[in-house]
Length: 308
Length: 286
Image: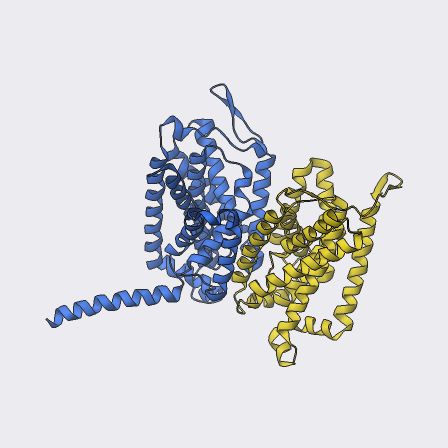
């Protein structure tokens, strides 16, 4: 594989995490415009841990997830009262505050005679863990897709579990969920925290591949993109958001003549798609139909075997 | 500055009021208008009235496109889809302008050469006073339009309850479209006066206009015109104070932090007495 393909694949994998993070919140009925904050916190936290304090990436990744998850749970707790558009705007305000505070923050320590650490809009550079340990982009590719595979597996397990149906119930009708005896508050905070931790994984990988991250990497464009991925790909399955990422980063990146007009094409695509499929390509109904179709064939086969 | 924010917020609040949906493309459509205006100025040295007209026209055309694409075409009840779709169109508009105006930063004609007015220790820019006056005039006209005409009655009826308005013989689709056009025109005027004070435009103006208008509207309370004015003025004052004491970055931090804190402790906005119940009902519809 040449380097360009690997870079594109790495991008697809990295964005998948934040897309899944926004998707998880969508399932619970919340639209967040602020998941980029937790992606950014994940990137900065993990980058600072490896670059400034010499931690291993494998230790920094879970720590960054915890930091980001706690922050997200705190925000989720504060914004519990808000619904719909209000929640979306509150998360947006939070994310922009985080981004701008990163712009205003400088904190550097000496590492090998060089100052390392967040430096305002100059960003956080010198995240050399991958370089020092001789990790090639291909190695990151395996790491990202390995992690993504685990996350997807967890998603599928969750969707089949009690937790999955609780989250979807809350998303469909909060009042109904409450009358069913579900502790909605607790689950909302849990989901917010999980989504924050999920976004942090993408951020951590991003920081260690790029080696330098800037506050402007985590602006509202990233947040709304991650939300759009779920809405394009479909809200019926965890594969939906990844399909959305594939369409944007994969397809539009790959087609040369679109380059200069990428946003126009992507924007138009999203707008038209949402007119005809407001819940995305792989929405619940299509997933259900697919599933019954598959099951039907399997049943037909077993029946046939029994008959013979 | 606050009066400019107030005007932006009024446009926002009008759209939200009739539709109960958020139009993120509001700022970018104004940005399209502003670039129309500057194009006329740079190519033909057009006078201020032509530039103002072009700005409003551009904003209205872009606004109409947004309405057809993101709101008219998307079914009732899919407010989220509309919001995301309006964001998608925002990206389209921003890139289209960037392609048409590749230098990114352009000059915008100033209102004129004005001297600072000294009021004791204070010095005030005359442009800001003119903007305040225009804002007050527009608010007055808008008030007349909303409370003294059939169209205004229709707008208020749709914002109260679209289904009931439809049963009463209001052409809701047309009312929404016209309210959209009206909001875009107000946005265009706001955009013109803000730009004529700043004298430099970039495609990033779309983002700023959306954010400032949005923050001002939410501070005041969604869907309320007096609230939008109060929110705009409050935002202007807070931003200036933060900039004065802590620097330019803190200006924006203060704005977003203010919004976040407001949403947590007073989600209905400044003027939320008694409207809380109606807001909740509206939210259920969203």
